[in-house]
Amino acid sequence: MAVRLYNSLTRQREEFSPLNPPRVGMYVCGPTVYGHSHLGHAKSYVSFDAIVRWLRTPAPLGPGFDVNYVQNITDVGHLTDDADEGEDKVVAEARRRGLHPMAVVETFMRSYLDDMDALNNTRPDIMPRATAHIPEQIALTQRLIESGHAYEVNGSVYFSVGSFPDYGKLSGRKFEEMEAGARVAVNTEKRNPADFALWKRAEEGHIMRWPSPWGEGFPGWHIECSAMSQKYLGLTFDIHGGGLENQFPHHECEIAQSEAAHGVPFVRYWLHNNMCTLEGQKMGKSLGNSISLKDVFYGREGGVRDKAGNVLLDRTFEPVVVRHFILTSHYRQTLDFSSDALRAAESGSYKLRDAARELHRAAHVAQPPSAVSADPSRDRSDPSRDRKGAVSQPTDPSGDRGGATSTSADRAQLRQAMNPLPHGRGSDRPHAPLPSSLATSDAVRSALAEIEQRFAEAMNEDFNTAAAIATLFDLAKRSGEWLRDGLAAPGGAGSGASAGDRDADPKFATRAADLRAADGLMQHLAGDVLGFYWPAALGGADNGKQDDLIRLLIDLRAEARKNKDFALGDQIRQRLSALGVELRDGPQGTTW
Ligand SMILES: [Zn+2]
Image (cartoon, rainbow, N blue to C red):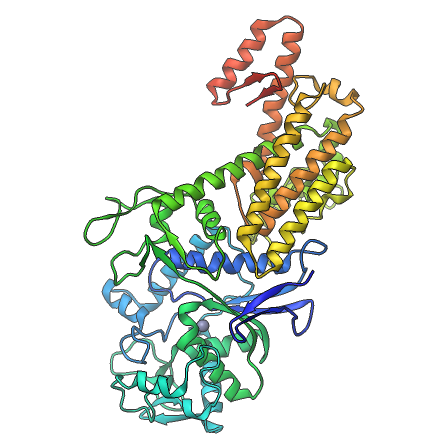
């Protein structure tokens, strides 16, 4: 199954065929770091994260590409006005706060990464900063002057739009229209009002300045993306992503600079994600209705309100809910935020989480005790466990202990702590194999295969995450049915039968395999591919251990009741209750 995507450059859906498969070079315009990230950033970067995750998903489910994901940090040159006028956004914020511009950059770059980590976005493989690539930007500018595509005036350098006939091919704008539209600009240095700055002369007192062949100055905003994308991905690369609002002029200028300088096509597939609105209104700092991600996750003192005091958001929402909400719409559609819409997404997200949690517990419990530590497929079928910590192993099979107390689990945990990438290219995190090899029953196997198939079709058709999520709800529903069937069967997980009884049940292994296959698929699709991270459901060795302990106590209580020791049984229930674990006895067994 091939991936088909909507290419903004050709304005049609095309089969994606990378230049050097299985390698894929992908660049996404990163944030300008002069303030906290807002909902628009979440929409953009969650959408592209889902795309990267899908492209990386191994065969046979996914295309299994080796994606090199580059996303820049704009820390210089992005002016308050698109027509090369106004102040550098970072410098303006630095003045307001009385800080050095690099302190502003550092603050908001870290804030951005915190927010993206909270949303469980995979960190890009390379995050180049514009200020760290001044020589590359100067070299590209020089090349454009030498080839007659740019000219210098009073220490500033401008790209001559008229020298590049393809200018406008991405946005579909005609040169004459752009010329007329730009005429209001007052920059008298430009030969043509539509020309744009590659390098700007630094005026007296401008802090962000670098020496160049044209005197001290700083780069224009557009040139950084051309210089950095081509440095890390080559002169022609596969995918360039960004927000629709940057299609013109930013991306149009990137194409002009890169293709004029090198004479080869710059990008093969352009992907643009659409914008967010807030209750139907455009969102923005200047409009006074901007909501930062920190507002959404943690709230704001006095409530999240606009300038007039109207409530914009009536309570906080977890990052995973925001992620769920974003992925329930297509990346090329606008997304309208509101408290009600987020509440609806929350209910969907929690429903899925609860189903995944129930399935995970049952699959975990359904494993015969002897298999818990010995089954090597266990931690692979449960891939998101190593998001927070490794599944513990009783012994170190490799034998190369680093110290008296260091086990492979310790080292794995340490590695995770040092390398928090959930499954980036630079991570040694194994990809989850599909659970088809397990000894599942025919009915369950074909049901899972059908869900898998529909999920893959949805993602292959221009990354239709909304349809993919719908298949997860189907999986949740079917799993619920299997669980009820399984729990009702004699000796089934949760029936109150002791571990010994379960071991002796010949049907147990098949049922366990079914549950584990369903659980493995849920974790792979929801956790690995869509990036839903529900701490209690999917991650953390501690949670698995806690479930084991509760299950052990349920077994002991059942044993006590069998021996007519009801006092002990009640005591177990009461003490668990005091710890916040409520046991529920039903016709289908004991759950909590
Ligand atoms: Zn860019």
